[in-house]
Image 1 (tube, rainbow, N blue to C red):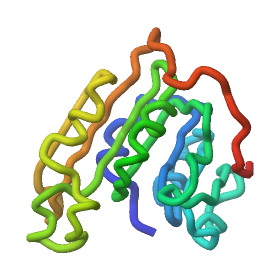
Image 2: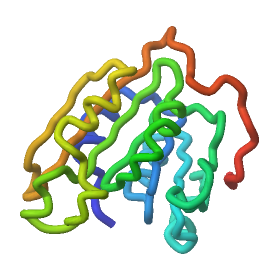
Image 3: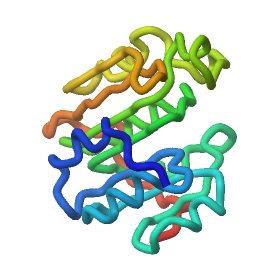
Image 4: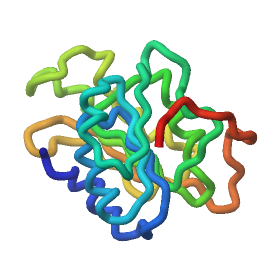
Length: 179
C-alpha cells in the first residue's frame, strides 16, 4: 500500500486521537489505515466493496457511488474531511457541509496541466486554475498550493471551519454506512 500523502501527513500532528475523519473515495484506504492507527475514528467511503473490505475493522465503511447516488452521509459532521486524487465537482457542497465547526477540510488532486504530464487527461477530472481556493472561500484557508509535485500537476488545500461557525446542515439524518 502506498504511504499517506505528505500533504495529509503535514497536518495530522494537529489531530488528536478520538477525532472523527472522513476519507472520501478512499479506495483501499491508505489514509484510512494510517489515520485509524493514529487513534482517529475513521469513516471510509468508496464504491468498491472489495476495497472497503480491506480496511481494518475499526474503520466505519460506507459503500456508495458518489457520482450516481445521493450523498450517503447527510447531516453527519466530521472533524477532518479529506479527499485525495478524486474530483467530482457536484460533491463540493456536501463535502464542505460535512466539516464540523473547528474541523478541517483537506483536498489534493490533479489540476489543469496534468494532461500534458500523464493521466488523468479528461478536463472533467482536472481542477481549473484556482478552483480549490475558490471552493474553500467559506472556510479559513491555512494553505493552498498549485503546482507540480512529484511529476504531477496538482492543487491542494488545507482549510478549517471556524469553531463558532454553524454547520451548513443542521439536523442529523441517519446514514446508510456500516460501523
